[in-house]
Amino acid sequence: MNHISMIRKLVEEALHVKRLTCNIENEINYELTRLGHISDSDFEALELLMAEMDAGRIALVPSL
Image (cartoon, rainbow, N blue to C red; front, side):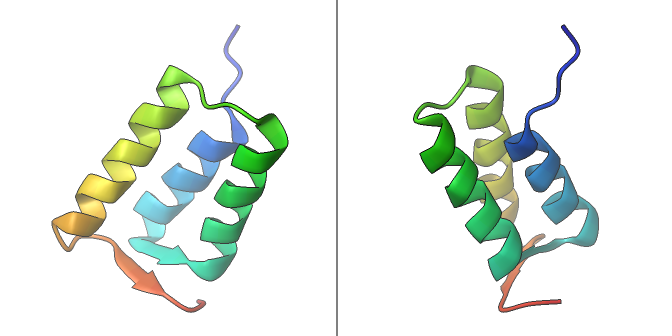
């Protein structure tokens, strides 16, 4: 199955634009709440996003 989760798509978007907007963050939180669990691949994607933010390569911004 080659299904890419919504969480991974949102992380990819944040990595692409080099910004984590409130909209992206809210959508990630919504998906986590809706699903009630997190897959290993989603967890790894979120870890990557956090590492990129910690390294200063992704900015947390209010909106685009």
